[in-house]
Length: 175
Image 1: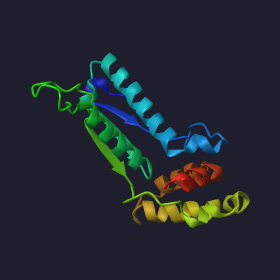
Image 2: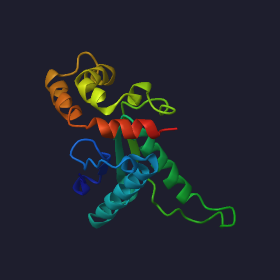
Image 3: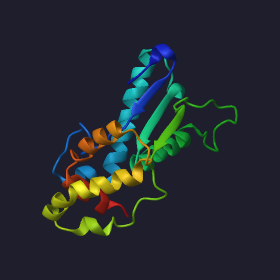
Image 4: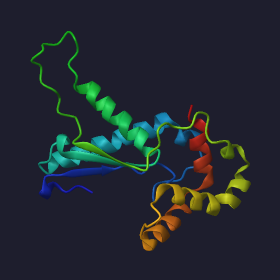
């Protein structure tokens, strides 16, 4: 949601397979490069919407959760590189003002798993049977023990909507 009336903008990235986003069966739809491209398009959409409300890209925050934090960091780096004048440019060259206001990174990890978590090598029907316990483990790691029980219940419902074919496709492709 964009809040131009308050002088702020927010682009929250929800990748394929999670939440209310599409859940394609195609393994390639979850390739890191495709997901990064999706985030860049979300950025372009948000900054275009922001411009229409009088908000500049420098007032837009990107909010990311879990492994989405890696994509958000890569987006910020990409935008920073776009703004850095090349060595052949004049030192007084102005930036393209495409930088973001900031990142809000929630529940990220230090690095993506190399080759994916070994559990994702199990057959899909086994992962489907394990989904509830995997979601419980995720919530124990992602949330403070004193988190509001209603929020935890809501997150359980959302986690169980994420198909295991998406989780397997995503986690197995990280190198």
